[in-house]
Length: 342
Figure 1: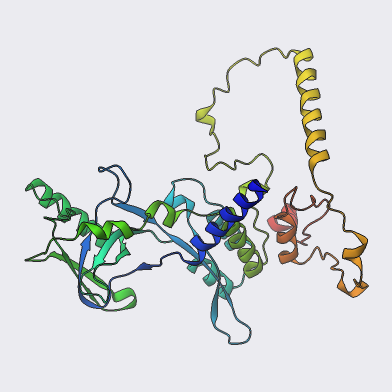
Figure 2: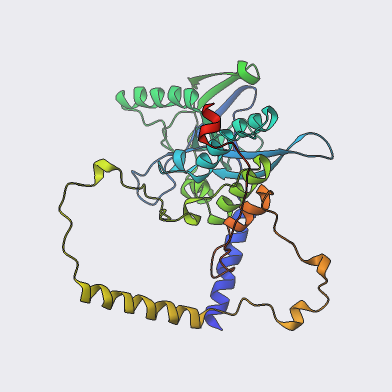
């Protein structure tokens, strides 16, 4: 029972972290004063910012005709510098021959754009002693970085709680005409160390879950009609966030070693035994008579190979949570190479 309670508590914490997640804040129009805070990590020389970029996957709401967000995902390429399934899926969908202009615009808008996140106090805001996650564009952050370096060369730590300096960020214009200017405040007050008790963990802020990735891929499939399959659902793909080795990473001129047939047979037998053990311990996925009671023929979904959304849902099923789907997921009638060339 103890292990069950541990899993329940863990899941409760995960749900709470998702539902109570702090939202980042952009500088408001006009002049606003901010105080950047030191690192959120235990080590004193830890980072004071992280890079972030979100994919907002939208679709057109048939009831209102307006865009509606279906999924949000932090881009792995921007946050971690690793391959991003969502980026790949958006690119693949955009290159599909069946995509119309309106859908192509939605896919283009879903591309992530990098920002820099800081822990900061909005000194002129409604809660000046509550740390916020301040999101700055790359060009604005570059101004801030230049200022921090300039003051550091002069022996001043702008992020010090006691001797730091506030920033005044002036936002003018709107849309593509938005402009930000950054200057140092002429006078700044010390910050009480107690604000660090409620500082935001920026590592956790930009971290993502497999559930969010699957939801984003599914949303892309529904919006575009093109199946979006992530690395974890494709054969031979990497699931640990590392990049696949390139030809330069491998010495392909090495001689192929002789195989020890007996060792191969021994390894195969071991793997077979492990699979049998795992299968024996896996709960039966076949529905029980009680679960089937009251289910009519109209309640049964028949797969349609021309439906991209259903194909995407099948592609994302993974054992042991669901059975492995086998067969034709998606069928598209397109001209063969010779016909295209003509």
